[in-house]
Image 1 (cartoon, helix red, strand yellow):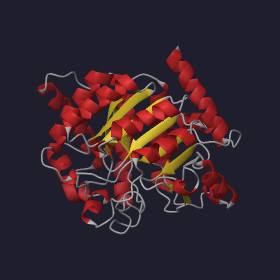
Image 2 (cartoon, rainbow, N blue to C red):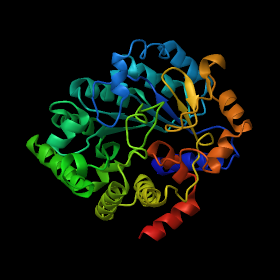
Image 3 (tube, one colour):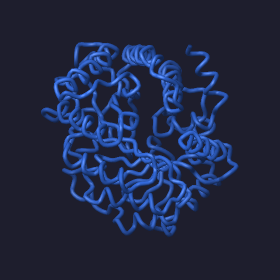
Image 4 (spheres, helix red, strand yellow):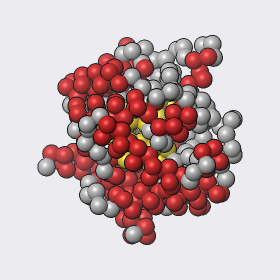
Length: 380
């Protein structure tokens, strides 16, 4: 019952924020560091470590404390990177927000899973110290040989599965997920994206079996679609124009989404799984038309903060709005100025890059119950 109450409270505030009633965002996407030891083909964040000065000027822990104190209204925080756990004081960063934000309900971070022992230790500590629900996504983008090539690390798949198993033992199966980005793999791998999703699921379960761990079901297998972002991924200058590799790959990604959706029908109907169902349905619409029926809630329900303190409308739009170092670390002066300047209106009117990333899509779905219900009906 408490979980249902918490979700209802979060959904109510998200709906109010997206409607412009409350004024303050419920969710923060916070890039805690751009440090990363992966070498992914489709993301250039890892290249920053070879660029002099690129990793300098990150918000210090003391500055992070000031950010948390100045924005105590947050209820959901995605701590991301880079590899967030590569930040030496990552546990302290998360704990700072847990202490300063009394209504914090959800804490999520993705991980490449390379350093199993270190990541498990962090999760164990956070599970004990953070009041909010802790959710971890371990990135796996194919069966072993394909995943390791795409992510650029030898034995990456084995490390990621070991990390998934270790974290699941600590926080429970309902709080840890495999995350796969459905890139158009055919040209580079000689296999369809849809087949790769099925093969990846099977490979994860085979590896868990070898570790004498219980298998996952499709409810623990999250998929998303690729995007380009100069300020976040740093990949817009090196990828194809749309990031999908053309219409044929778009069709393959849509097929993979349909395949995953067909498997998850028997996995129960929790609030998060309903949101994921809507996400996949709208992702297929996006792949076909470049638009979704659900209006983005960036700069209403969500805000994005870079590791250097810069605020952007979202993960994708390369439009810096201001730096919290100039506002006493408060988000609202920057967000309110962006609203006055018409940036939020541009988002509402789809005069932005028109993305469909889970970071912004999930809160938008929660804030759009009617359109989400229609998306569910149309996809059934």
